[in-house]
Each structure stands twice: as C-alpha cells, then as structure tokens.
Amino acid sequence: MSQILGTFSATNYAFTATAPAQNWIGGEWAKASSGASIDVLNPRHGKAMSAAPMSAAQDVDRAVTAAAAALPEWKQWPMRERAQVLYRLRALMEGEREALAWLIAHENGKIYAQALAEVDKAIECVEFGCALPNMAAGAQLDVSRGVNCQLSHEPLGVVAGVTPFNFPLMVPLWMLPQALVGGNCFVLKPSEQVPLSMVRLAELLAEAGLPSGVFNLVHGGKPTVEALCDHPGISAFAFVGSTAVARSVYGRACATGKRALCLGGAKNHLIVVPDADVELTAENVVASFTGCSGQRCMAAANLVAVGDVDHIIAAIAERAAKLVPGVDHGAVTNAGSIERINGYIERAEQGGAKVLVDGRAKRGEEAGGYWVGATILDNVGADTPAAKDEIFGPVLSIVRVPNLEAAIALENSSPYGNASSIYTTSGHVAREVMGRVEAGMCGVNIGVPVPREPFGFGGWNDSAFGHGNITGWDGFRFWTRPRKVTSKWALQKDQTWMS
Ligand code: NAD
Image 1: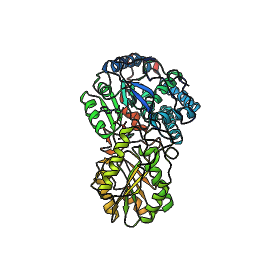
Image 2: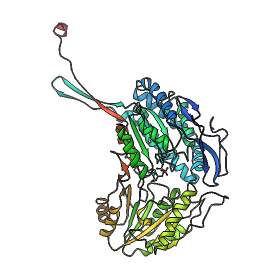
Image 3: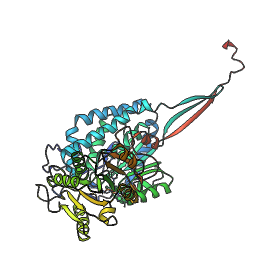
C-alpha cells in the first residue's frame, strides 16, 4: 500500500505492524533532527504499531524553507490546474477507500464502519476543493465610467495546520483543499497519536501530481506546534483540538502577526421535550454519544430532559445497554482517557447521580487496549464536572430541568458553543430553541448536526477562536486574501486609427 508504511494492508482489526512515521519535507522522507520519537499505539490492543518522530524547531524550519522554495512556482499555476491535483487525489482515495479506513481504525481505534464514514467525509472535503475554481471567479464591476474594479483571491504564502487525534484523515482535509487550491504551500503537524493517515496522504498527494514542497508533514508535539506558531515564514495558522490549547496557540500565532483560526473543544447539549418521537430520539441520541466512542467534538454530552421524558430516557438506556464495545463502537485513545472518563463517572456517582448504564467494566475482545463502554448518568447536577466539562468519552449526562426556558438557560450557561440539538415533533418548539441557543451548529432531531459541504464547520464562543468557519467557502477565504484591481484605460492621443 505505502512505501513508508511498508506492508501495511489490514483487512481486519488484527494487529499490524508498520514502519515508523517520518517527516515529509520537500518531497522526500526525512528523519527528525533529534531522533526522539513516541510510540503510536493501536488503541484496541495498546501495542505499539509505529512511532512518531518528535520534531524540533529546526525541522519546522526545514519544512518552511522547502515550502517557501516551492511557492513561487505553485502560485503561478492557474487555479484550475491546482484543482486538477485534487481531482486525481479524490480518485486515488476512492481507489483505496477501504485500506484508508483500516489505517484509521488501527491508529485511532474507531470501528471500521465509522472509519469508512470518516474516509467518505474526507473525500467530500476534497470534492469541495475540486469545485472551488467554479466558485472562486472573482466579481468585477464598472465602478464608474471607464473604470473597472476586479476582485481576485490571492494566496497567503506558506501556511500551517495542526490537527487532533480523533479524525486523523478528515480534519487535515478540512484545511488542505482550500489552502492548496488557493495557491499556498502547507506545513501540517498531525496528532502524534495518529500520524499514519497523513503519511499515506503525503504519498497520495505526490502520486496525484502535487509538486514537491507544496505539502510538508512535520510530526511532533507541543514544541513542534509552538515552533509553527512562532515561525516568521508562516503567514496563516489553523488549529483543531482542545479549548485550552486552541486558546493558547491562537494567542501565540496572532502575536507573531499570523492570521489564525483555532477550533476548540465542546460540551454539546441535546434538549429532549415530552413530545419528542421516542424511537427516533433514542436511536439518534445513542448514536451521537457513543459514535467514535464519544470522541467527537460534535458528540452528545448532556441530555437536557425537559419535564417528564422518562419513557424516552428508558428507550435510550435500553439501546445503550445493548452496545458491544469493539463491534458498535471502538476503543478510546489511550490509558489516560480511561482514567479521565472513569474519573468523571465516579465523581458523578459520588455526587448523587444515578448510573443508568455502566460501561466501566466493558471492553472489546482483544487483550489489552483502552475500553470504556456506553455509560448514562441520570440526575447529574448542572454545576457538577460531569455536566460542565468535556469528558470526551461515551458518556451521556442527563440533567433534569422543569421547562424549556430552563433548558435553554442551561445550554447557554456553557462556555462552549459547538453543537446543540432539540428533539421535538413541534416546529414551533424547534424554531424557538434554534433561534436562542448559543451554538454554531444546531440540529433538529439530529444528534450530530455536522454541516456537510458546502456549509462551513465551526462553533461559537470557547469552541472557536478567530473568525469564520474552517470548511466551506469561509475556509477558502481564510487561506486567501482578496486583491482588488481598479483600472482605467484612457484613449491615447495617437490612437487615431480607432475610428
Ligand atoms: P489536543 O488539544 O490535545 O491536541 C491537538 C493538537 O495540538 C495535537 O496535534 C497535539 O500534538 C497538539 N498539542 C497538544 N498539546 C499542546 C500544547 N500544550 N501546545 C501546543 N500544541 C499542543 O486535542 P486532542 O486530544 O488531539 O483532540 C481532542 C480535542 O479536540 C477535543 O477537545 C475535541 O473536542 C477537539 N476537537 C475539536 C474539533 C472542532 O472542530 N471544534 C474537531 C475535532 C476535535
């Protein structure tokens, strides 16, 4: 399948060794300068399947230098030709859709079906990039007699992105299509927990005809990210990860004059009212809080139960109790995650919450690995950590409120603002809630209201720092700058041959 990943060609969850990941700089694989690395664990087994080099500032500098060298030629390519690379990338990704999904399932721990869904969503992001030349024709207008003003979208130069562990393929592809079609050269630092999908993507981009140096991959952790924030040769910086880091790197990147957009964490509220459809709500809520083991910034976190919805909660609990870890959802990312998630469950229980469904002792078939099963906590106090913090695991906290006003107030008391959903059969109730909640991505009877392309992905408040969405047209605007050319061509005195 891949030069660097060696013989990796999984067709099942069995442990498969791969070669250590390397940086991809100027069209070549490169070892990081320090030689330090961390193991990449397969969360289903907990065994090392690869290693990620921990790059230092000088590795970042090498990548930026390679990107800067490729820039003058790349930005001369007509946008349509740049987009042709993405058409070819799309075909290559379609061609190895299943292998890419297995690679994600191995490094991330999610089940194959959910990894396949990630690949399909990533392909959709590439398709948006393919379509950009058709959308990006700038406006022009005769602004006064004989004077024309014309708008074009120009590249920013060398730009950078940093991505989280939970969507190793899709989140980088939230950034790359718009940035590359926009004429920029890119330096990407994926999560050190899941570096392999990007290793394969580097190979696929090269196969698709992307010139050397236009896409560069630098693996590493905090020091690598800080070097990207500080590097004077980078003009724009995008980040997706937890709120604490998003806030800090946003400030750091802006301090060196970069354009920055940093997406953070979430605590998504699902409001359920008594008139909600029982089956639809139960199926939807369970899929939302357990999909990808709750490790999604769009996952259900709090179920806000308005009035008497016990019959709906019973249906949710019945479904959730039947889920089989390893079959219906995957493992969580590492040992620290188990400790964090179980810690929240234990503290909630000690604080008086009732554990309706307990996933603490559940695990997948494999020996080792990091497992937490679906867990539902009822009667969680609104001011307790289980209701306020991002748990990032398959845990649903039920907070009881007497009426819709209290539900909206609870939702809006959260500092986060990623997603919010209402379950109801009343259009009036849906409109009321959707008009008032503090969230950028809202759902009516939908638990994971991801705006598909071309609608932009992005939350509000502490879920995003910077302006606009990261995908869709906003993404293209983020990675480009508008140029306006105003021209006037007067008749020359000696042009007597005009008439
Ligand atoms: P994380 O913040 O720990 O790491 C994200 C990236 O930042 C990684 O590449 C990591 O190497 C780097 N990093 C980690 N600590 C750093 C530090 N102190 N300084 C600089 N860089 C640092 O996030 P994660 O655990 O990989 O991913 C889960 C988080 O991402 C959750 O909070 C989730 O909600 C969030 N997320 C948000 C979105 C969104 O669109 N808003 C999408 C996916 C994930």
